[in-house]
Image 1: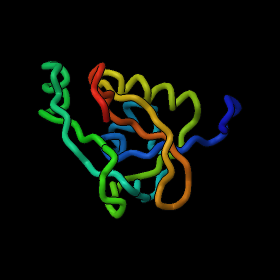
Image 2: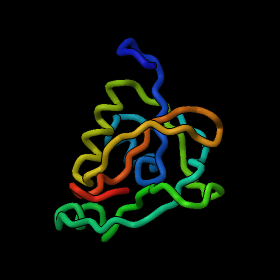
Image 3: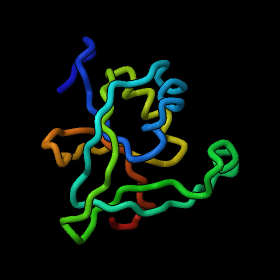
Image 4: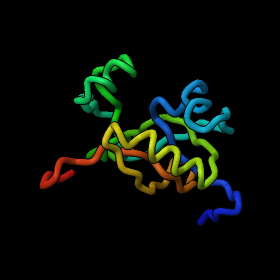
Amino acid sequence: MMSKTGSIILLFSYGTLQKTSVQVATFGRALKRRADALPGYRIAEVAIIDPAIRVASGLSHNANAVPSPDPTDLVNGTVLEITEQELHAADKYEAPADYQRIRVTLQSGNQAWIYVHKPPVGASR
């Protein structure tokens, strides 16, 4: 696991964190990155409820990776190399969208963090 001493943490993005402009705004720099995919998941849309977030993002829905019944499904995205401090900045960035961070194994075999929408209380995934 990564330490506070500057070790690299892998974060898989399938959404806005792939954009250099969002990385610079969130982390203060463009991140080192490479293509990868998340097997056994597919993209679903989640409505953005907060009107301020809808206006700021220009979007009505966020992408959300959800487990797929088809094990051949893939979510394509980007592995970002970040520090522990940047991981906490990513948590703050994703919090208004009601996302939670989970650990997954990517197609490359690397383990990475991803953000997925929190299900409503009492709902099952």
